[in-house]
Image (cartoon, rainbow, N blue to C red; front, top):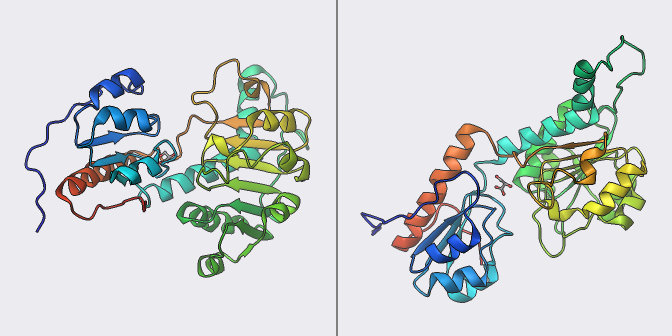
Length: 307
Ligand code: DGY
């Protein structure tokens, strides 16, 4: 029998910009639960400041690399997150970003406004189609599988995926082949990053990785900026070591206006809007609240990180 609290006292941050860290540290003191976003670093300092009664940290995101989950585990603090609900929205945005990058939509659109559009010309503003290409996915969880399913109708020659363990059944649904990271780098015309940021994946796309990639390769990242060594990416794009990149995530976020990446034509950058469709975000916010209520009642949470 659930004993959900009938009334909760809630302290909220009302601005759209993230809560300043000093405010978070001050206001979390004495609370039983923390409702946070990926912009809030929930580390030892925040947990210490909260105090020993803290029972739950719930994030309105599927990614939880901003939370020190090991520290939560040690303290018996349960961690909630929002997988599944944002899978379709994120897969959809990934395809939009991929198509905007490979067909140079933003670059072409600028030409309409800056006088660059003189006439139709056979090779002007040509991009690299998905048809007949090899597409590699780093990560093949829920989002990766949905991205693959959306790529299939564009008729690639092959979809490959790189993960620690085989996902044979899920891969069969989209006819994807498991490859190691090196083979993905060497063979892919497109690489889509859809893995979590972990110590293992941190800056896995570094200068050495870019060296192995085909010069026509297009890198798409809708996962976490930290998976890519951004300086190395800049060099790879500037020197045409790879063809282009589409990024919905960067380091840092927001990307400073003087970041050199913003000067390049062969990169499309979006402001971390992968899951930003209205219904998805509303449901993410409801799940986060329900996760907290369940944790406070000692019930099963809708989506709990296994610690
Ligand atoms: C997540 O949920 O981790 C996304 O990056 C934002 O929705």
